[in-house]
Image (cartoon, rainbow, N blue to C red; front, side):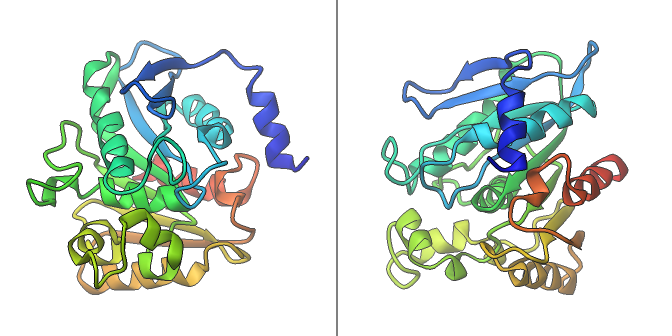
Length: 258
């Protein structure tokens, strides 16, 4: 058992979060970890990775959610349909993320003027996509958001969908030449500039998602004057979601400063 897996196991001993459903399928569920105090609390929407596929679930983000709640954030841990699970892919995965975020408008004690999207790996791609929902075409999945994010924290994120290869093509239901409008809407590199601050945290030893992806995104955003910060830290792919690691501490410091 790795250190992060041990922390996930220990996290199950904490007080259970509030469970909220936004649909009738098993994957259409979110956990709300509330901080102490009456609020209203700033919100961190947490989107897990796993290359949009099983077996990874929101459980992997639970230690991070506990740390966010300790820091005063209401952590909204989102599950969503994935490839091979509950008919995920385009547009279902994107519809789920959008609907889950908009459900926050129905909950009390939350400061929806301070919403940060926190995404890891493939969840980073979804976070960058969700931050730009207001600019999507009116008939696009996720258009016309009820809850608008004010910043993005992308952890070891898939920032460039073409480099994700065949899995990205499965996610979008075709290659760029076959469904160009889907790639234009979903690929973070094609949505620059977002118009909200973006912080990218990436481990220099990441063997799953090349740190060059975050470097390229940061360079492209900076070139057009978009607010972006890149923090390249020691560690591997999971370090940015492990509260005990320096990568997450650097990310949390940005949360406190921004």
